[in-house]
Structures are given as structure tokens and as C-alpha cells.
Length: 375
Image (cartoon, rainbow, N blue to C red; front, side, top):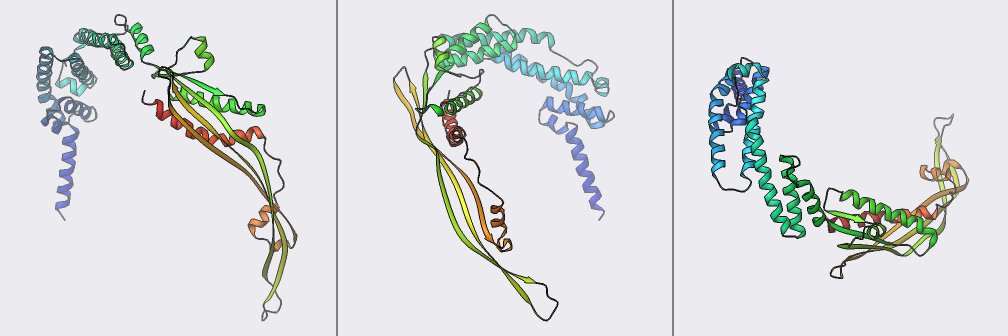
């Protein structure tokens, strides 16, 4: 029984040791070790383990930092200055945390920071990315232009407005971006044109949200393409066909309802029942709408048909109600609910058109997303 407190004490001491960074320091995870020690000193300024980790670990960490930076400077590796930036920024963060923690500052009075050194390293790192970007851009392919864009973007993050990175980013993105025109064929029946235009607009909006302006796929209407003298890389062609809207079916079914119910009687020795009877007519109105959408994707440069699928869709509007003669008590709950319902006006045909296109929309947007996600 006395061993339990000792066991729990061991667990607590182990957790305290971990929270002070002792184990991380032993593993050579210097920044993590010292950061944990400083965090511990914020809540427990007199913590002996955290004090020891910071006091002994900080000089070792500085030596490691200098060794790493010397090694980086002497190697011939692409983007090597980014490794130096990573080390210096971690060192600066550690220095800031020590300065903000009185107990830690009492141990390390003047923590080292690399603020002045970082300015020149940022420039070197930006220059490396700039040179890599120009090399990729010179290849003049869509894929190399995309890589060039990323290089210029990183260079601009290191040094805002470095050389002409902003202009080169625009050029790279223009070359890298896939331009797609969405062509839609109006339905042959004029009263459904409004609904089909609504569907097409929804698809266009989805694609522009899915592949926003920061991506590398842009979608245009034929009007926009003509206005900008655009030569598309791909053309999406959408056309509804073989559709019918508002086909009404009415059905009726008669049933006999009967229910035998026990009734109260003054004579407790006798059990009496009463039988209720009714005749119910179940009525149902159904309006079935359906059609198909043909979706095709062309590549104008090669005159190839890359995608060709027919997507069907259906929607059935149903209204059920009932009338009866006889005893209401003979009806079950479902039958009774139906008798409370009545004939409803048939839905608007425009709405029915939209309803049967909803499953088509879901399938179409998934297929188009998969096709263009590779870009």
C-alpha cells in the first residue's frame, strides 16, 4: 500500500522533468528544450530543473547555432540560406521569450539575437529564389511557369518587392494558368430557359469558387472570352436534352377499415366490444420530371474531345390525401392524418425543372472538379 505514493511521485517528477525540457536537451533538441524551460520558469520562477536546463543548455545551444551557420555558409546547396533563416528566426524567438521572462533573464542576461544578420540573409535567400524563378520562366512551359511563380512568391515574402518579382509573378501566372470557357446551349423550350440559365449560372459560380483567382485555372463565359480576345485551353459544353417536366399521374385506392374496441360496462362480469367501420379512399397525385445533361470538354489546340458524359436526373413531387365515409374511430393514425390533408395545387414547372437538375448539378460539379484539379 505504501508503494503507490512513491509510484505517483515518480510519475509527477517525470512529468516535471519533461515540462522543463530536460529530455529534449539530452536528445539535442535545443530550441524545444530551452523553450520548455523558459515556459516553466514563467509559472515557477524557482524551478531547479528548468533553471539548470536553461543555464547549462543555452551556451551549448549557441555553439550549435554557430556551427550550423558556419556549415551552411560553406556548403554549395540550393536555397541554403533558407536553412540559416530558419535557425536564426528560432534563435530570435528564444531570445525574445527569455527577455520577456524575468526568471529566465536573471539566468541569461543578454540572450543572442540575429536581427541585423537576418536582413542580409533574407536578401541572399530572395536572390536565390529570384534566380531559380527566372530559369524556370525561360523554359516557357506551363509547368515551369507555375514553379517560377512559386519561386518569385517566396522571394517576395523574404524581401517585399525584391527587384521585379511582382511583375514576374504576374507574367508567370498568366503563362501557368489554364483558361476554360464554359459554353451553354439554351433549352429548346422557351419557358424553361430561365431555369436552365439558373442552373448554368450555379455551375459557373461553383467553378470560380472551387478554382479561385489564386489558383491556376480560370473560367470564362463566351462573352468574357470574346471581350478579352481569349484563346481558351479548354471548352466545356453543356446541353440539356430529352427532358419532360410536369407529367401528372393520379391514382386512387379504396380500403375498408374496421376496428373492434372494448367499451366500459356497468356489469363488470361481462366484457363488451363495439365495432367501428369505415370505407376510405386513398388518393395520390404525382408529378414526375426528368431529363439529361450532356457534358463535354474539348481541347481546341488539338481538336480533341477529352470528356463526354450524359448525366441523368429525376424528381418526383408527391401529394397523398384521403376521404372516408363511416366511423372515424375505425381509422388508424396514418389513415387519419391523410384525411386531414387535401388536394394541393401542382408545383410550378420552372421549379420542377430546377428540382430535377439538382442531382445533375451534384454529379456534374464533382466530375468537373476531378478533371480540372490536376491543373
